Length: 302
Image (cartoon, rainbow, N blue to C red; front, side, top):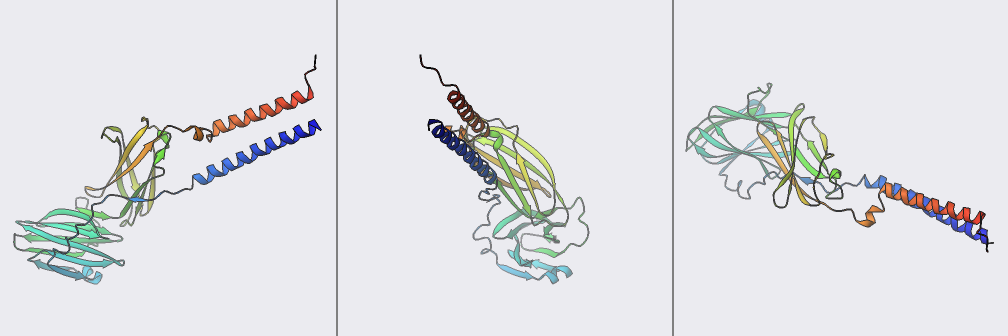
């Protein structure tokens, strides 16, 4: 009867170990599929009153862009066009001698805000269309401009502005090993063909001290996900900010800042580590074998 009872206890221990191991493996498999909240890049938001300050609006159809439209502006003006069911605004303001300021707004965000000089033009790449804005002449009171689709191949020396969406997220914002840090960058809505981008990663602590800088060059297709693993990262425990700067097109940049914390591994989490877990299983099996041998070879009483 004693042996039967001990065999039952041994069987229960083995079952508990097997069930625990199976649950651990299932948890590990599903944990890799968790997707954290996506954080978009910190492209500056449009000023709340930038459109309200515009004194004149031109609504240009896509067909009109194919033919081309010329206008002489004497006030702050905005060109509105709808491409692929999305409204875009090109605002011309701050007229001066031989230059104007050009603002591009899409989805409520200011994606472009630069000065354009007379007899120059800029090309906005919007999905599969290239929209050309030409400044023929300007003075403090007026500006002669032209807006049309650019159908030729973009010259290498031309200024152009690529329009696409960029999102950056961290796989985890609390990590227990520096090498577990993973940044995921998603690119969507490019213009035609692949684009060359430079990704610059910088890790700083709360005091602004930089611990890491990494630079990657990528050729990105129309939709692509770029994953950055920090396999060689060595930083002490603490709170950090990962800044990701994406450079593309002609002097264009998008920047994202994501915070993360490197923590010491808690004791309870140590028990979940595969090596330690296997070690516990081996110790348990060794204990079971020891008890069985003791049953077979009982110590003789003196």
